[in-house]
Amino acid sequence: MDFDLGFAEEPNNAAWLSNRYFPSKLGGQPAWLELDTLPSVAQLQCKQCHSQKAFLCQLYAAFEDEYNFHRSIYVFLCRNAECQQTNKAENFTVLRSQLPLKNKFYSEEEPSEDGEPLPAIGSSRKLCAACGCLAPLACSRCKNINYCSSSHQRAHWKQHKPSCATGQSAQPSTPLSDIEFPLYEIVMERESTSESAVKDEQACLAEYEELSARGQTGELRDVTEKELDKYFGNAAAMEDKAFQSFKKRIAAEPEQIVRYKRGGEPLWIANVRDTIESQLQELPNCSHCGGPRQFEFQLMPQMLTLLKDENLDWGVLAIYTCASSCPISGYVEEHLIKQDIVGPAATAE
Image (cartoon, rainbow, N blue to C red; front, side):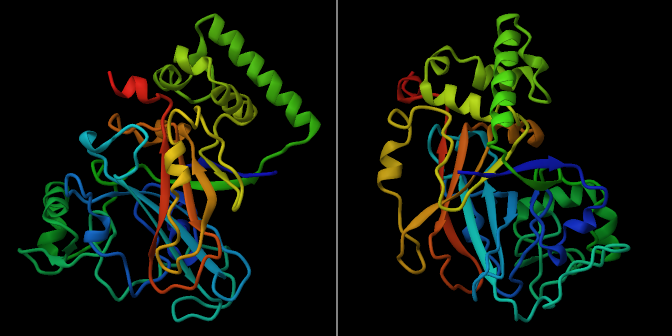
């Protein structure tokens, strides 16, 4: 079963990643699809520490039916260290939004990519100057700039005081690194399962094992020595058949950060029985229509090297969405399962 693989590329012009062009992207601020009914502040607030969750990524994943001509999936997470728990995903939020071809926001014509990019299509709702989410609070000084929370207001003030003085809410030239992740476009390509690709995969795996034996695993593309130690240097993991299968499957394309196959099966990084089996058995139905959910895509550990946040850690993030992608307005929550490479024995230590 072929998957589509996502790779991170630095954008030449970030304006091409606005909602007008229906992007798939990592980091930056969300490019909202439906513009009237945005997620509430409470919906994007961590239940444990009450901080606002950060935008991680979004995938444009439309398919041809009456309700899903445009469709995007958004992933948010709390970045605080104390909210990261092994094989638990309470600090994540996944949202689905979709629109028919005929809608009040976008033209029925495909957006042109000739010339310079046009501005983003704006929302009637006010957005946070720091993170781009719904902003019910106005700056107490100028009343012209809006924020989702007092913490984002303080962070924005520190770096962009002149914008408050002039009443301008223009986006900062550099992101607030404690709030926004570095921005990349996610470019999708079909995973090859041809005989030659399998041979390449086996060659890459043999190369990795040779490097590992010489203690030179840090040479494996852009994945850092620290990340390789975290995922590929764990002695228990090396004995895990699931881990061996994971390593073999990604060997030909080690830079993949997304694996997409609606209705497919995740590529787990560790033994399911020792990590997330009960979560899979109790997978909740769609919160909107009550129908079953199915796997749609997963985020890979290679993504961590791009985020530059030492607090974050995961093996696989598997996103499950409504199997029928039922008609909705605004945004509805979907489900995420986080699998780490360590099992319950390590967690209990």
